[in-house]
Image (cartoon, rainbow, N blue to C red; front, side):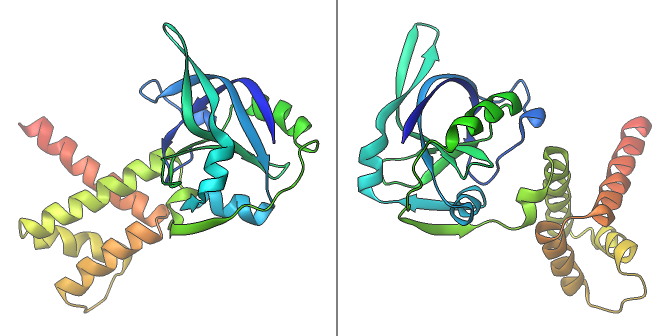
Length: 220
């Protein structure tokens, strides 16, 4: 384990790790003064990035308050912060006191390149961890695609609750034409496909709904 100094992180909810070019002004961008780094296997890093997980108490003790962040009044400690690397990729994780991953962040590309140059000097270690929940394909989506997916899911649920079944049937038939499934089945199939297999077909549905909303706004 070594310390890394003077980097920028965007620690957000651990079910997503956005690339730095997708960060925006509303994110919690932090200037980190110091943070320890641990080298793990590529398989372990994959699990770290793509799941919520827990680490044991002994690991928490190793990293306890070893991270510092710049503030408006000086610096403050981060209780459980660490960088993980497999020498090809770096990701930051912040844990709670029970060892559960809470927030994660990618690094700025230039800073990650500099850190990777140092990563081979770090001794590979085995990390004792347990996966709490694996993510669906949402981690493959861009930030805009994730927004569209969530927008569609919300629209479908509202339509079903308000009994706007014609909208559900119309959207379903845009993807699955000439299908005789029941309304309930159509609703469930749409929800599942959007939530777990978002693709360009769902982008088309998003465009249809947005266009419909724009027309309504213009008429009003």
